[in-house]
Every structure is written in C-alpha cells, then in structure tokens.
Length: 545
Image (tube, rainbow, N blue to C red; front, side, top):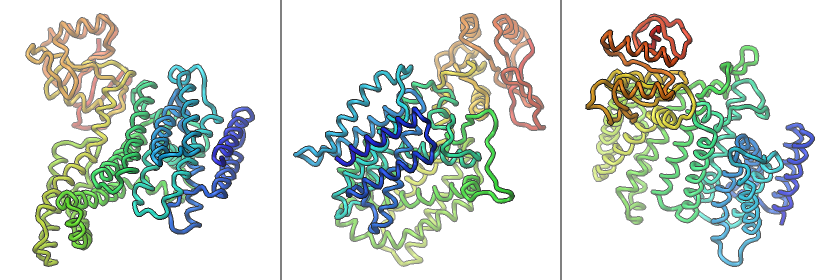
C-alpha cells in the first residue's frame, strides 16, 4: 500500500532527525516529496472542483498535519493519546464501508494498536519518549488516511460531512499548530524554533498539572472526533451541524484565551521590519475586527437555526428557503448596526458581567425589532413567520452572551483546576469576598483559591462563586497550623482590632502572608511591592506582621 510505504519513509526521516538533527528545510522537502507520492497514486482531498487548487490544498493538508503532530509531541502522552482518539474516529469511518475490510483500515488498526502499547509507557511520568520518528509517522499516516477515505466524495452533495468531518477529528492538532505558528511569528521567532508556547504548556502555565492538561486536550479531541463521526453519518441534520459549528467557535475562543496566557518571563514583542509591521501582526492587534467577524457568524448561524427550528418539515423548509435568503442580509446588517449603536464593541471580555449582559440584550432586542419591521413592512413580507424572529433573538442572546463570557468562564474553570500556585484563603464570604476573587482572577497573581472563612456561623458550608465557606476563625487556625494555607486575604470589611491582631499573630507564627484588599496607591502580592497609579480600583495590600 502506497500510504504505508510512504509512512515508513517519513518515519525513517524522523529517525534521521532524532539522530542527526536535520535542518527544518530538509524535513520539509522530504514531507513535500512524500505528499507528492500520495498525489501521484490518486490520494487527494477532493474538496475543490479545480484539480490544481485541490492538489495544492492536499499538499498543505498532509504537510501541515504531519508537522502539527510533531508540534504536539511536547508533553508526556499528548501526541500518542490524541493520535489514538483521532485514529479511532477515522477507523470507525473506514469500517463503515462494509465488507471487505479496506486495507487502510487494517493499516490503521495496526498503527493504533502499536500506539496504544507505546502510550502505556509514555503517559506521565514517561519512561520512553516518541521522538520525531513517531510523531511524523502518526501525523503523516492520519493525514494520508483522510485522503484515502475521500475517493468516493466527488459525486456527493454533502460537502459539509466531507470537509468538516476530517477537520473536526483533527481539530486539536490543527488549532495547536496554528496557535504556535502565529504566536512565534508575532514574537519575531521562527515557526520551526522550539519553545514552551504550545496549548499544553499554556494550560500548565495557568495552574493545571501536566496530566490534567493532557487529559483535557484528549477530551476535547474526543468531542471533535465524535462530532466528525456524527457528521459522516448525519451530515444533513442541521442540529448536529450547528453543534459542530458551535464547537469550532468554542475551540477558537479557547485558543484565543490561551494565546493571552504568558508563558515566557519577558513579554513577547511583535516583529517589525523598520517601520513596517507585518499584516498578520496588525490584524491580531485589531481585536474589535475579530469581534465583528464573530458576531457576523453568530448572527448568520442563529438566524439559520431559528429558520430550521420553525420549519422542521423538509418540504416546508424548502418552500420558505427563498424568503430566508432574501431576508438574511437585512437581518445581518441591522443586527450589526444595532450592536455598534448600543456599545457592545466597547466592552472587555475578561470583565464581562451583568451590566454587559444588559447591553447585549438591548443590542439583540433593537436589532431583531429593526430587522422584523424592515422585513415585514419594508420588503412587504407580511406573511413571514414572526416566530422565526423570536427564536432567533433567544438563540442570538445566548450565543453572544456565552461568547463574551467565555474568557471569564474559562478563567474560573481553570482556577478550580489549578494544582500549583500560592494557596489562598479569603477572609470574608460576602460581597467583598467576591471582589477579592475578581481581583485574583483578573490579575497576574499566581494564586490557587482554597475557599473562604467567615465569622458568621450560618455561612459555613455555603459556596461563594463556587468556592466553599470552610468555617470561621477556628477553621482557619486548623488550616494554617496544618500547613494547608500560604496566604490569607481579608476582604474589604471592618475587623475588630482584637481579631485583626489574632490573625496577624497566627499568620506570622506560621510564616503565612496576610493581606487585605484596599483602595490605595500600593499593592503587595506575595511579597513584591509595586507602585500603582492613583486609582479607585481595589488593591491587595500586605498587612505587616
């Protein structure tokens, strides 16, 4: 089999790189040559009508995925685990063709079995490591197998399943490679240069342990694989297609969130050439442009979803589809204008709250109302279903709110998964305690929140922002004396001089940092004093022992 022979050759190239440390250009030439061998024997994507463009896209696909798996081989068990998840999804598709079993399925089953046996010794803490010989083999093989399953797609009308299926199955390696490449280019480093700026490293940087970071990426790859299989069988089902689209949007936002995680000691500077900044760098700094593009996609998808939900019958759907196409530009245009008018694009995602939700609701309401009036009376579509706009408004409100709150939601989730950082107990489980959490989550302090303590015995056992109220002063004493706490932060509240003195003595005896949130000109977190400009924003100040 051509794919198997080419895979053996790419493994040999990887082995040579492990031993001789080949130049990146040398490996790239070998990858292009072997991808061309696949094309010569008829292995291609068949995604485009133009054979020339499809040939170029196939070369990019094979070489890109080969290097994507090479890039994610940066943490114990990560590359092998994702290869098993993605390969398992591809194997299900290969076996679905029925008897006889295709040779590609046999090759893939053997490859997955060998990878599973290797993974037993490669998970954290690993006793053996993959190297380029293994990662290049896995990436190239999986890329080639997506081509082999595409031989029968030229006559199919379900292009969604043809394209989205493989992309979803291999989405995590694709996103990681894209994130790393863009991050390195904007930092003025070569894409082939190694570093600790992968998605797995960024997860560890925000407090996850290596096994948890790897497990999370495995899980996300499994979700993508399941959606890819589903689209292979139910590509025409709009509900599953919308779920898949939502997953891709969510993963893109997750990648954007990870891109903001600091993984190096020095801030990365954008590369410039004299006074000329590369276009890609300029675009990445245009965050508002990305928000507008996201809202454009969400508006279109939500309106289409509302239309499909209203006209569930296939015949009724087709009879009204022309009206949907004619009204779509009006809905998109009015919605984007109203979003701009109400000020949605002046908010900060990391600090998204109730006030921002109200702004989103206003934008959705006025946008829907304007679109409805224009469609019904401006275009004379008086018989058009009003229910479509009600469903559309509810869907868009949910989608835009979740997209804006995504950074805060992900930040809260990652904070709860932390296994590193200073262990912090917050004294005071009221509104002031919530302010402390906002300060810790929104800042750069390397803190792991253990929970709250409060003098009010009625609050014991409750939860504030998802963190438990552990008890009162006696519970804090037990935690400190057992060595379970590194820092205590007092919320903005008044403590009696006696209680404050007891806290100071207790923390000093156990070498635990005692701080309080105040409004002032100085902030001290973990012993480092930083001058702050005059501000009314709350700050965390250490209390001298």
